[in-house]
Image (cartoon, rainbow, N blue to C red; front, side):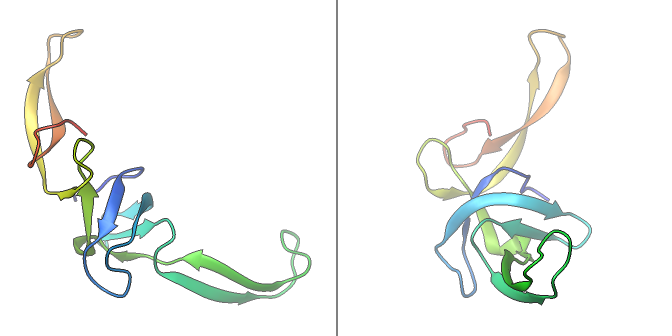
Length: 107
């Protein structure tokens, strides 16, 4: 899965196409992500300790990870993600980093 928590993404398919937001949570086993402000669902709750009044709570539901693309930090456009192996200066060890396919910028 190429999308990680705290990535800025744009929805490319579905009812929320074109909306952007930050990834709040990732479920790699189910290939789903929760994006801030996207796929809002209403839940009716009884009064409890956390919410003594009860009522209707709106929260984000998950969407399929294939319906989002990471936003390129350089251009602000949606981009594909690739991996690149670089040499770490501090430890002199190889490590893998995510890079934007469009601009080559590290994420």
